[in-house]
Image 1 (spheres, rainbow, N blue to C red):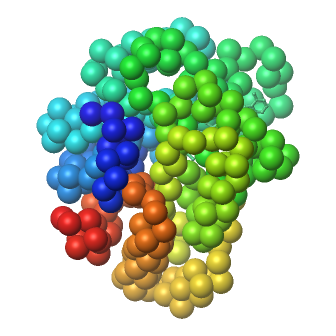
Image 2: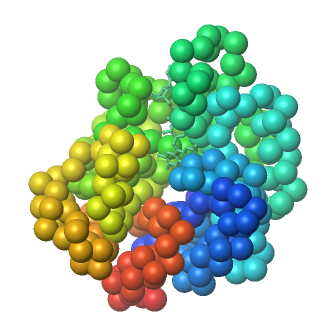
Image 3: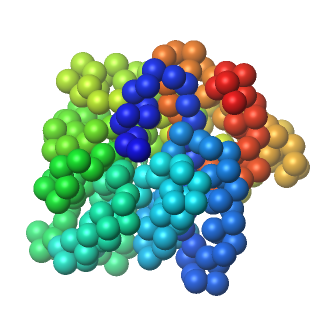
Length: 292
Ligand code: FAD
């Protein structure tokens, strides 16, 4: 099933993100974790590509397993930077022959060793190029793109970032998923600005439950997200007690999600990071709201 059809049903829903194993030896444990998340029957599950400690090799295996064994729609991520046209074409062929209907088209982060290289020689520089190739390969694919309520770290300003986002959507994105954020007002301001700029596709907010204090620095470094004082106080108070921090982090994420639903968002994506217990608790906290 296509993500666009799920998120436009006008019914509240929750989806989860998982990442593939880094090595073959980790495959079974990751498979088990992702299957437990699939058993929760979320509206869909996205599988990252080379992010969050995973590798590109297993994205499709994990996505296909979830789709075929549990009937849960999957969204396979694909990145293009530092890839060749041949590799990307091969990946697109694999995605289509695995029967995957949804692809998250991403540029990917630029590897450190290429940061100062001559970018004019690269096969891909921006996600928009991948979006065009995916559309050309199969016009019925449902394509997602990433967006940044707090601006992509490489953008000079928000106006420029939104202009580029609009080009990416016009190239063929059916929906957008946001980078994590910890203050919902940032999302509401962003939505106002992109709608004003003529971007009309559905936007799925991405929520990251912070369940241990070590995650905080990494999350800020990766996303550049603003940490509200309310969130900082929670980490200060409970950060050294793992069980309390987990409970507080889940409660904070739940609170964010309820506020999003209350303000007209219908699907929220949770960066569940292969943690079935965290995914299950968040879903349980929303059981009456979601009717599950
Ligand atoms: P782009 O859309 O290409 O944007 C990157 C930057 O370039 C922005 O500053 C943009 O404004 C600018 N730009 C775009 N087009 C142009 C243009 N034509 N000219 C000049 N500037 C331009 N990474 C992974 O490795 N694997 C994953 O699975 C993964 N999943 C993600 C899922 C989500 C929801 C999000 C938000 C991010 C994810 N990432 C993942 C991280 C992502 O790859 C990085 O944030 C990356 O730095 C940018 O990717 P993008 O697709 O947004 O790039």
